[in-house]
Length: 552
Image 1 (cartoon, rainbow, N blue to C red):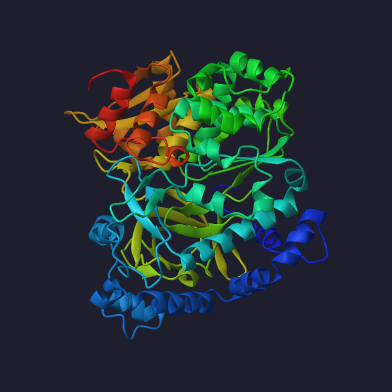
Image 2 (image 1 turned 90 degrees about the horizontal axis):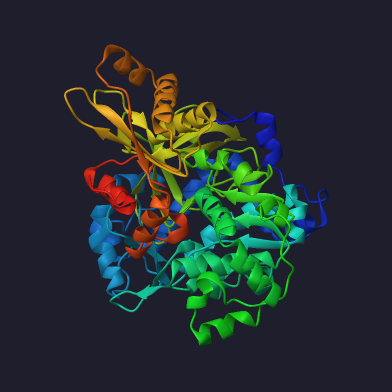
């Protein structure tokens, strides 16, 4: 599956029949007939679809301050866009984003800015990206296709309640008065009322300022509902909340029996907030089994599956208490929606060519269009969006794993530039995560979290820091063997003595929880944080050790 998709299976997943399927699917299919027709047309005509999007986006941005500076007045086509605008590093765009945040109009697009979306990786200051009406409509159309395919494949998921975990849509205001928040919260609030009614957790819970109180309240509301689908960006969120269920079992049981929100971390709620939330709660008996798949009639879990997330996906069956289908949520970010997954066994999604303009930078540095890609090759994703991000380098690498008609299927492979490379071995995040998955299976030790860094010396070596496993030396040795199997350059450097054996470092329990808390306090969206599989610099490593209560 990870290496590619059988073409017949891909074609079947991309089909949306009108007259077949379960009742909820047929209802949604009828409501989205125009969208499906356009989507099926675009699968056969990716070039024409992208030309249409380029023309529409150029109409929106040519009269903006950025558009005028690039001379876009006569630009109409994909080639015009490529000639006029260079590929832009996110930091190069920051002065323009600062002008948007200050309240200046017409900076990146002629449309009004609805809000700013906060996004941050493991390093760097948060970026505040504009959300505009046309951009939001493009993202929403891709999301509808994803929901339609989910309903087609999982009727049971439509019968109960949805546990959808998001960050707040607004937590601050920019200097110009624009709301700042997360894209996941924005998308949830943009749903129609009848769809929001299906959510097990009301939106105000996600605005609670204290992380532990927020997590407790999420679980308290979910425990009283027949949850059939669990959706969140990061699989580590599912693992975290499954651990919290065990940790807070007694106070949650106390609150369940009484229909309240008063025990455990919820004891810190102020009276007014508690009153606004408690009226929604109901009395329920204490569950006999607190594992999520035994608590709820859980039909599907939706989260990231690509790149380093694969390690955490592998741990879901144990945490859930059963094997539950895991479905990719899409190649998507605060910048936009780029590929739509349409089946459980897809490691990625089919390119959304009716959304943003998508370009792909190959190993030689050449930019390619969607219809020019090759199966098995990796590319760096560059986007142009309705909100005015012009040829914006996401620094995300994707791999082509198949085709649906004439449109590529891609999976997320990892962040470009996030490599361990002491003597030419160039080990990627995905290889590190895959090696740790294999090592945990051999040694019987599954870290709650882990980070690998390069320790430079006369003979360099990797340092493997893990939380939750006492026998770290055995795990490091298994990791060494597994990584050598996945990266021939690493194997050669280890065999020649140019790289030493990995060193092990045990981190106390709770380290990655504290790391997450510190990152959220610094402005990162809570549920979109990716675990730091590789520490690319000393500052990143120092933050992990600070969360562990250690020095360097």
